[in-house]
Image 1 (cartoon, rainbow, N blue to C red):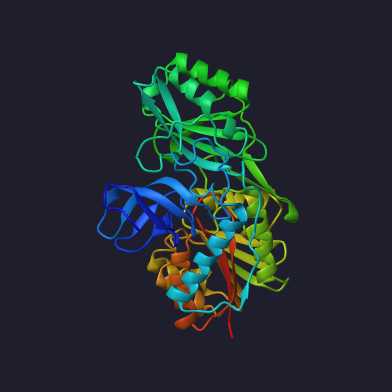
Image 2: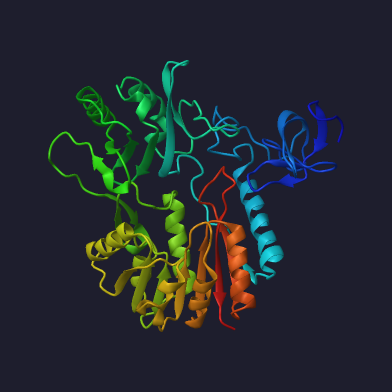
Length: 441
């Protein structure tokens, strides 16, 4: 590596960070966004931190064979994607390497079988998103999009290549619409939900829209065949902006392999990649192998995404979720799909006191655990282990917390890591979803 702080430097990239930035070692470590392992690049340091510096890529002097041209014109500025310059197959290889490293280094376990990655569409796949909106007087417009990569501003983009249609092409029309509103300075966020039967846009409004604004919003919804909602406060304040008193059908998505249709509210959590979610649910059933006599416990069950599919094969399934609205939706989805061998309970799975509830007394032969990014609390892992299930499937959205929890389940509770693999839920991002199957020896 040559050069000094604030000047042009040349170095080889030796790896990627958790955020998809190229790593330069030798002297003080530098993270360079847009650089790939094996490349020789020139860069300049732009920010200093205690343990590392941030660098701006100036030129790729020798490219990695996996480098591709980003499809999005805003890549590098918009923070929605980090890896569009890396071929999709190579992205999966990087994510699998990261997962393997976490399991070996953090969990100190060896995986007996590596599952092939679950893949789906890599463009126009994202059916759930939260976009920022900001009126910028100097530009005379409202910018709509994800946050910028290196700044807390909303990226000024014209379209998005990863958002599901029609939203990907509605960025510019939304920007133009908001600029005409009287409350244009008071709409900071747009939540996106693309269902199989409709597209919902939830506008966070900090001031009540005028009648003039309401007319423009209704006209936009009609012209673009979307459903607009206004949110003035918390989740319970979401109201649909309709042209009459009629109530439209709820948003829904299908799990075709199981003959299921699940309804959800526009701000509910659903997996962002519909095709990959279907593959994920199918693989979960293949790994857990529920049978007519099986009793299954689904922890962090949400609105029944895994629970109802499991109930198609198992004798009885119990789902537990900490958000009351999702529990209500899960019960509704069970009735809507004619499934009676399932029950749902409200429970804070991060609170040890909840783990004495009746639903945790079993017996259960199979357990599915799908916690948030922080993973599961040790008390929940211990409670699940006491059930002595034959199989435990852990679905994860963060390899670090997964590795920590698998280490506890293996070293403290006697499970064996049977198989693991990555799930390509978020192509072009550094986000790693995965699944791991454990069994009793």
